[in-house]
Length: 332
Image (cartoon, rainbow, N blue to C red; front, side, top):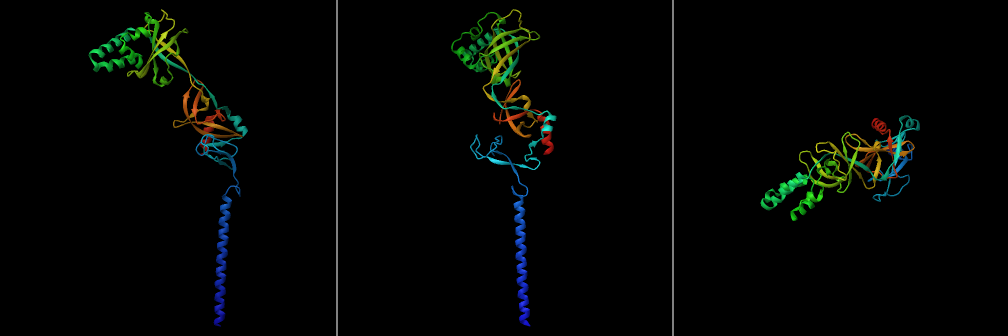
């Protein structure tokens, strides 16, 4: 009897152990299957949308390779079911693209032209001549005032080299810069501080009487290296090539200078979007795919804007980008 009970207990224990092992095995297999199902290529396969660089996300390639900027290996970006997997990306069908009027433009390398404008007035040599005399006298008799008189000359349009020449040779710089006795032969113009980078001595300019069509050719002679403390503008002096007796000292004038940049990465002005926090564009990736891309504005022209963050191989949305932005915001 004892042997029977003992045998029964042993059989029960073996059965319990077998059941436990079987349960654990099934559980592990279930978990393994669950993990496998979550991986790309199983129950929910993911399609590679394109390859990009983790350091330079503006790089998009159809095949694996290396980043042309930093040389790092490109990584795949997967597409989820129903569209692209980025919160800043969207995919539209052809019908919706047509209805929303989306148009694209290429990213280009080209020069940008700017038209610099400033208020101006006819001026005379008298103010500059008096400021020169004050500077020369301070140099000889009162060195403590020399810096103040030097600043005054700068505000009147003289640069450091011209002031140094005046200090070494007390000959009127005004007489050498503006030799014409006609007080109407030169103009004083006041450009905004933002134009400082684009102003160059020797640049051709036009002087226009407000409300009149005629323009007078002029040349930019000198640029003050310091801002006018009252107007916060850059004081410049321009020599009229053909002085007119019709121009009077109290007339309101407009001075215009054409500036052309070096070659830069350029897109249409209409392609740029700014939401108050960042500037961005929408890249047109083909097959109805669009992706938001942040850019840095370098220079704004009349019709185009130069930016950093794009390549000439890319295309941007030039019309309909605000509608795309709304779609992306709704998606996110």
